Every structure is written in C-alpha cells, then in structure tokens.
Amino acid sequence: MPSPSYEISEDLSSYTIPLSALSHSYPDHTHLVVGVAITNPQTHKLLIVQRSAREDTFPLLYEIPGGHAEPDVDNTILDTVVRETREETGLVVKKVSKQFEGFEYTNSKGQNTLQLNFLVEVEETGAEKVTLNPEEHQAFAWIDAKDDLDSFQLSGAMVKVVKDALSLLH
Image: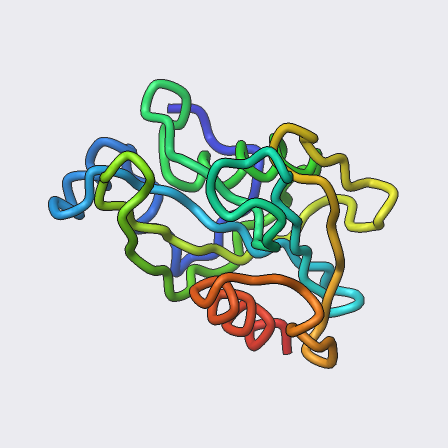
C-alpha cells in the first residue's frame, strides 16, 4: 500500500488498517461515514457547509463536510477523510490530527450507520480556496467558539459535533 500524501497523528494509527478490516470492527453498522472538521490553525476557525436545497435529507442545514466510505476507492477510513474533503470543499488535507466522538443513525435506506469524526488541517484555508460541490452544498462559513450557532440551521446531532470540534481548537 503506498504511503499517504498527508500526515497522520500517532494516536490515529488504529485507523490506518484496511477499510474492510475496520468495517468488521463495527459489526452492528452496515455503513461507515466520516465527518471532517476542517480547521484553520491560525484563526482557530472551523469550516461548516450548508447542504443544497436539492438534498433529499436535511436540505439547507449546515454541517461539517463528510461522506460515505467507499471500499472500492478508499484503502483506509483516513483516505475517505481526505477524499471527501477534496470532493466537498476543494481543499487538500495536510494532516489528520484527531478523532473525536461520532454518532450512530439509521440512514434514508434503513442502514445502521456510524459516523466517525476527524479533525484535519488543510493546505489552504482562506475563503477564496473553498470550492463547494453545488450538487451537495451551497454556502459555507468559517466559525469559532464566539459565533452564535443558533444563527446557522444545524440538526441536533450536528450541534454537538460542531461544539465538540470547536472545543478541540483551543
């Protein structure tokens, strides 16, 4: 397996195993997804993105970027983190720094799903560098702990994820 083009914190070594092996670690979940908390280390801000109005589930709600693990594309769950970051924001992951509390849910297809959340640093973090996929997202914001989360429409689960991610930035 080729070495990744991004840094991985030592405490994330358990996520460098093949995606198929990781999936077997969660037998109660038929689907693995990632949430990616993208940070700007200079400003201590977090990127959130607004789902497209055309989305079937949670249209117009804000979330952290993320998506489905694809075993035919991703060697590891960390590869999923890097791929989803690039697909949804156009940003390139420099370092996967931490894993933080995820959550479980049943998706629209009735699959038991586990979302694993990761904190990452990217190569470019300026607003002009974010390129959204318009099929999935229509707006974005860089936020910090001083921002009023009530001014962004977030699901209950995503409020907790965003607060958890923001707490890791200090």
